[in-house]
Length: 426
Length: 206
Ligand code: SF4
Ligand code: SF4
Image (cartoon, rainbow over all chains, first blue to last red; front, side, top):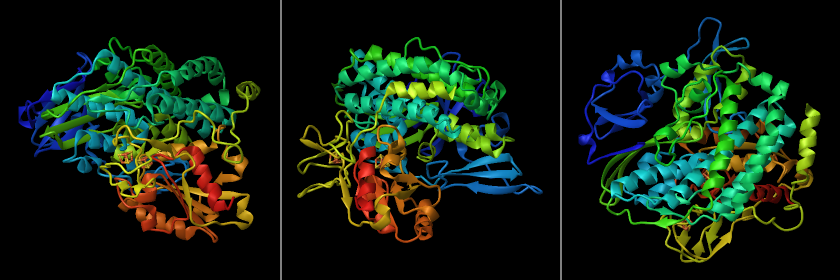
């Protein structure tokens, strides 16, 4: 199960986080109502679990080094001997976003990196306080427009759980279709960015136009190119099935291009062994999502999501940028198939969620990794929201993978993670 | 290998639209929409006079009302003209977006829209730019960066605000015009790539 609910924060079991088995993944720590909610992903039983504890024990960091990433307590690197610290960003055209990295460098090598977060902080969590679920959903989907559908679906499911309503199968199909269109578009866009980093001009244009094809499908089928407004708590817009036919052509094109991409030696050589993260890194730093699956670790929260019965994660073993690209490529094809299966079933929906009351915590698998949220509803309004997009943790994972790489590998490594500062900052 | 890619590209054929160079907006590009008449808007985008397209989030919360497309919905207040009519160098700056606007701007280079054919090129430094293209509502951290980028540009120069956040601040902060003068706005949340191109052609004086 990917969503849990409680009457209030006090009903969450109090557990010392050091007592939680090490193989449960710590996905988020939310500071809420004077306590800390710990969100765990248990992949053995495919469940999200929530515990609370008054603080974040200092020695937990030794056991779980990824905790510093989660709590944002990573110190930026400092000058060491002849190595100096550069700041790349926040207006660097290579990032195409307001954000920056500190890079400790000597010669060509990047010795240590850390993200410089906060340039895009828009306080979505603070702004939704006191708002109706509908207004809050509009803001939540604009945390990171590229993951808008996943954010809206996650938030909606939490509110619906607290209101005691659940959508029928046809509506689940509509939401799943929208999420898989978003995943398909994002995966194509990441392949495009990887081609761009390797100056593969024809591949750049090919994957950019495929991305645009999917954006047009989303515009036609969902009513918005990024799926804004398609769904909210207790509602789903009636999808238009006709534009979705193009997804079949995109799938054919992907199958057709596969050999060509694989045989593009210069392109693949640039990605090969770049920004490696092995299974031991994945376990050590509580890494989830595409980088975990590319290292052979089957972490995909769709396996615990009732919207995805029987889901089997896509895996590679090499743990480098090539492996992450092929995980995305395979998932893009699976997303296209899933969209084509769902489209004729998908229906709109409208149900009252006024009675939503209490705390709900949940997780969905956004294109790069898990998106986690906790919402407290009271009197039909949002009392508190805590939201953690996948990019926050993966910014740090990218930095860990890029250590000791040379500067020219930066764009490949970064593009392959498919992450955004807007999602990390919130 | 490059040959196989080129053949693949040729097989896909010419995708580029004539518009906005000539012709009409292509069918099926699914632009975002704003209400035709005043509505109840929780985001303050509607007054008695009507809906302000620079503030509308295209969220649809105002329900089942008559809507119009925002494709090509630009507000051009100043033109560069001269030799810049034909060739324009653009510095892209994000000052606090949700990143959907960034993707739409990046897509102006894709084969469907092909900004190169219109003489519109992106440059990695404001020192070589004629136009500062800004997305997002200005966050505290990005305010000085926006000022510095503008200062670094040579004259003549223009600022294009892209998207509701940049044009009006949207729900998240201050508009770009609170920091530097804006010469053109591209409306939409996010604006369509063709709308972005229209705003750029507008400041070029085309
Ligand atoms: S679409 Fe949304 S932002 Fe625009 S007028 Fe309607 S409610 Fe307001
Ligand atoms: S205008 Fe809309 S799409 Fe653009 S940054 Fe703002 S919220 Fe995102």
